Amino acid sequence: MRLVLLGPPGAGKGTLAVSLKEKLNIAHISTGDILRDEIKNETPLGQEAKKYIENGELVPDTFVTRLIENRLSKGNNGLGFMLDGFPRTVHQAEDLDKILGKIKKPLDYALYLESTLPVIIERLSGRRVCRNCGRVFHVVNHPVNEKSPCCVLPDIYQRADDNEETIRKRMDVYMQSTKPIIDYYAQKGILFKLDSDKDTPELEDALLKRFNEDGKLH
Ligand code: AP5
Image (cartoon, rainbow, N blue to C red; front, side):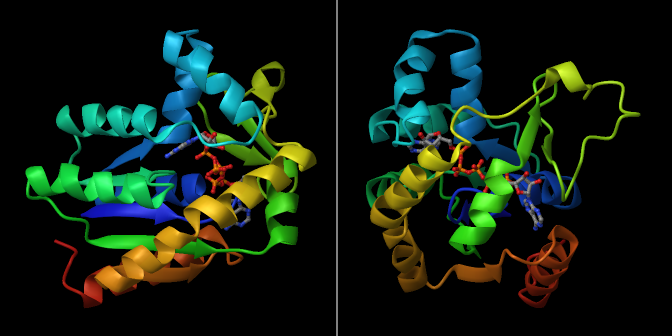
């Protein structure tokens, strides 16, 4: 199964991907996570990407497309992959088609998580992340489990781009640059819309039902 996850910041792409990847035995490839690792490791790419990310802007297409091409060429993706946060511009979507065309592995679905601004602001301003394992929490919806040996409070942090001003900027960028991709995939007949204000198990059930009906589950 080859999927892309689309939707505004905070729609729940990462949360859904983490829960689906085990069930489908596919790789979860997040450009946001890859870029944050580059920043943490202070690589040249990380240093370049940091200023865009912290301003809520997109990192230039050429950087991220190269990252994805390299990652996909490594294989090691189980029964497929789920791209989270890529593509984010029509140009990236066209490049992805070219990359997948070369290896004759087209996308099965573009999953679009629809959400609303109040929900997005509530989710992102309450999001917390574990510095050790990357697990994502929410101060209300999914609090840190104090019994966990890994995710303990000194290592729980708030992302630098999760403040209200940057969230609004990310939403503007999303509306301008990323939203047009929805039509791009609708025209290809592979778009599947989900109401991301629902909880994650409900979203997952709707997806698995659809994959099953389409004969995509083995
Ligand atoms: P990225 O990390 O991809 O950020 P994003 O798209 O803004 O998405 P988020 O990670 O903020 O949200 P999400 O939808 O994954 O939500 P989550 O599951 O965490 O990118 C960051 C930056 O990197 C970009 O701004 C850009 O600069 C750069 N970048 C990345 N890719 C790029 C590309 N292709 N091109 C150029 N630049 C790129 O959930 C959010 C919160 O809500 C959590 O606290 C969670 O617990 C909670 N939650 C989730 N789902 C639910 C639910 N169903 N019910 C209740 N709570 C929920």
